[in-house]
Length: 335
Image 1 (tube, rainbow, N blue to C red):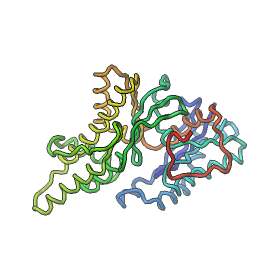
Image 2 (cartoon, one colour; image 1 turned 60 degrees about the vertical axis):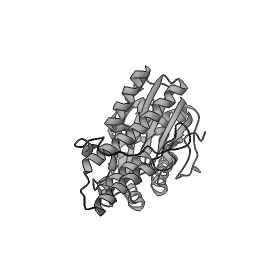
Image 3 (cartoon, helix red, strand yellow; image 1 turned 90 degrees about the vertical axis):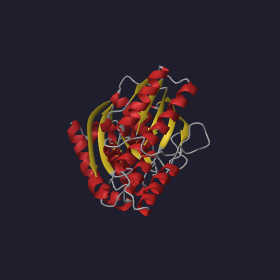
Image 4 (spheres, rainbow, N blue to C red; image 1 turned 180 degrees about the vertical axis):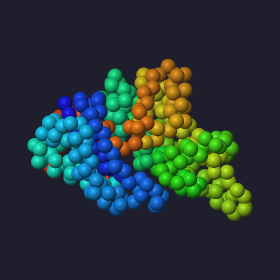
């Protein structure tokens, strides 16, 4: 079964063809990240305009690379939530038009479900149930994946997402955008124990909070400036990366221990972070739990993950009509 996936929830315009939810036939991405970096983050209006300019060509290339026509597809899947609403609507409306013109079913895909589905493309043998930490620019969730279309949220951020915190701290330290890779690069030259950063208190055993951690870095930078002292950006980057990854890993491992999970997974853009991967693997090894990690190339936003999850939504009977609307926010367990 061939599914065309369309993704446009942030600053990547992407299209991909995936077979049976597990094999990537083609995967095309156009990104405006370099342009967004000029502004220190994603400007929604610019992202939407770039999606409009790119989506048709990206979809055509995905079909051409796969050697198929729209008529050969079994369904067209597109991200419909959550994300920057203007950006989401560009990809979704393109998918609607393609669905209508080709006569192929339309499938709406939740973006976070797509990130989890990237694991199926990396590890074809992986099957639910498993516990997954989904960490990206806009989301930080610990999710119990009961089945391909059944999810339960055990914990989440109560304020900033991990990726958002990385971006803001990187900007504070003058390290550039995107923040995650910039901080990881700087951290390689720093001491992760040079600065003592707090572990924010939060209600709920598996919830996390990163606003206070971000503020602690900002305060340290401001205090250094007021005293005329030089703050070591590499040391602060390393200390921040260590603290945020330690918090995420500890929460995931605690949830795994309490729920008796046999399999742990990471997903989302921050899942590419090398330190987070090592901390989770080391902790899971002590608990005797198997870990599955996504291919780093599939951690960021892409359409292959949308096509993969689209396959499972389609086979579960979750087919949409042309009234499907985009949404800026929507829980992963909406159905």
